Image 1 (cartoon, rainbow, N blue to C red):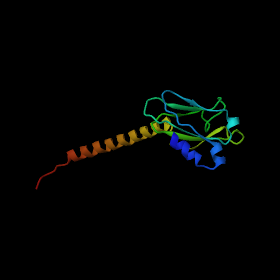
Image 2: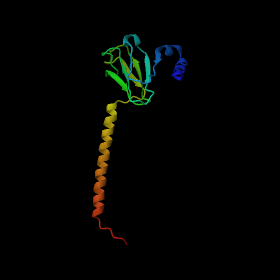
Image 3: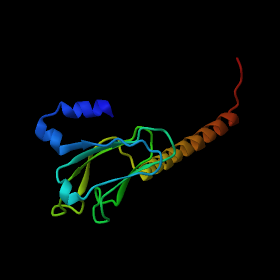
Image 4: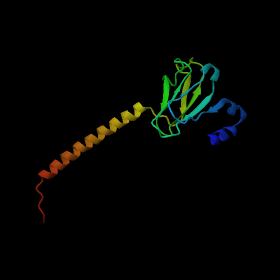
Amino acid sequence: FEQLNEAIKGLPEGVQNAMKAAIKEASGDARAAAAAAAKANKVYYIKKVDNSGNSVTIKGDSSSEKIDGEEKAILTLSKQSIMIICSGTTEVVDSYWHIIGGEYVKMEEIVKEGNETQGKILNLLILFKKALKKMSNLDLKED
């Protein structure tokens, strides 16, 4: 945390004033937010720093303050991070908060990828079984 604050101190004053870093050790579910109207152009970097089973939940100040169209963003993996910026308005899109960086992965994406991988492995096993069956039907004679 101190190193991150030192890095922010090295930025130009205008950028420094527009940024705030929040690193939260997940000793339980956490909520990090502020009213979007008062936080226009603010950038937050949030990182889950432990490997517990707890999660870090990032939500807007109200249910109308969405993050890329979602009610919340959840960090569940160790060292997972997210960087969000507040637009302060929903005139262009339906969200006040926008994901602009970090290592943020939705659990649904991990499950989908796992299911696809499982399907590929199953297909390979079926092909392998067929190949073994064909090989067992061959009459191999030693010379």
